[in-house]
Image (tube, rainbow, N blue to C red; front, side):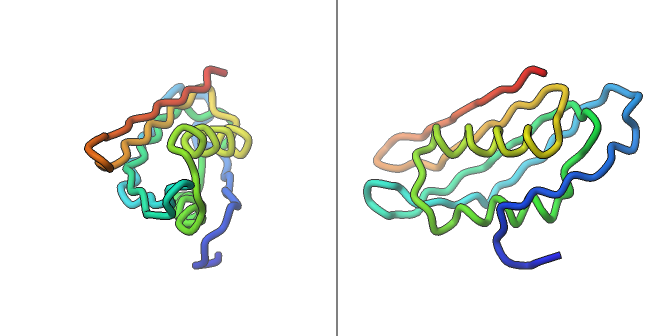
Length: 117
């Protein structure tokens, strides 16, 4: 597997597809650029999901999130893109992506996007 940023999310078979369970991943090192100023925005992404047929391979998720580092994105747009890409890759029963962006200009932003299968 690559060690460079990548938009490929690797799906692996759910080891317990007969069981309804929840997975929570906390990703505290997300970075993208402000599309207006070009300055970096930092966030913690928390991803909760109930697996369907697949789960996401964690290194692929790391490299996927890293791929946004040098791109300009509004907080709302990038949070929804992460949700859409994960849903397309692993087809979860349910998924919530919460992005807590660090303070910028005296404002903190939290964006929560949900998929209900």
